[in-house]
Length: 283
Image (cartoon, rainbow, N blue to C red):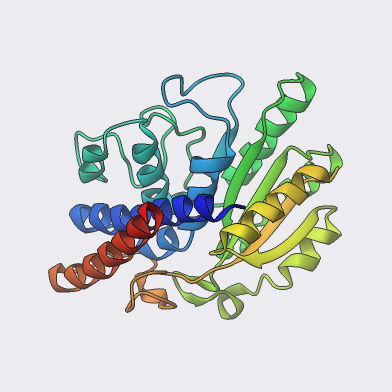
C-alpha cells in the first residue's frame, strides 16, 4: 500500500469517527464504542476496496457489504454519506422521526445499505446467502461482512460458518471486530467465545489475525483472502471507542450518547485527529 493511499484512508477513517460522534450526540442515543472501533475497516472497504457506485446503488454487479453488528451503523452511515449516497447533513437525523437513518441498518429506506441487520447473527447468514447466489449465478461480486466479538456468542453464527465452508464461499470475507468488550463487559466473562481463530478454522475457514487499525495489515489480509479457496475471516484486534480518550476500552460506552460536556471533549479530540490526517494527506 502506498503512503498516499494510507494517508487518504487515514483521513477517511478520522472523518468517519468525527461524524459518528456528531450523529450519536445529536440523536442522544446510539452505539459509539463499536462504531469507532471499525472506522479503519469501513474506510478501507468503502474508499478503496469495494466495487460500488453511489449513482447506481442497486447495481447487480456491485460488491455487497453486510454490517452484521448492526448497532454500529453510525460508522456505516458516515461512510455512505461521505461516498455520496446521501448528503452528510442527513446524519443529523439519526434515530429521529421523519429521517431514514434508523438505529440499525434498513435496506428499504437507506441508500447503499445491502441488508437490514440488528438481530445479531442474522446478518452473517444473509451475507453467506448473497455469496452463494453470486457463485451459482456467476455474478462475480464479492461479499464483505463485519461481526462483533460478542455476536460470536450467537449459535446462528456457527451454523452460518458451517454453511459457508460447506458451499465453498470463497467470495465472502468476514471481519470480526475483536475489541474485547460487549454491553455487559469483557466478552470472556460474559460468554467466552475464545479461541476465535481455532473455532473458525475448525469450521473450515481461512483465518487471519491482524491489527484492525492498520491499513497495511487490512489490505494484505484481504488480498490473501481473495487467493484462498475457502471463506475467509479476518480477526481484527481493535480498541472499543477508538479515538475518544474516555471511551477507549470502556464497556459503558457500548450503547449510550455523551452529554454536552463529554461530547465537546470527544468532538475536539476527533476533530483534531481529523485535521492532522487531512493536513498529512495534503502535505
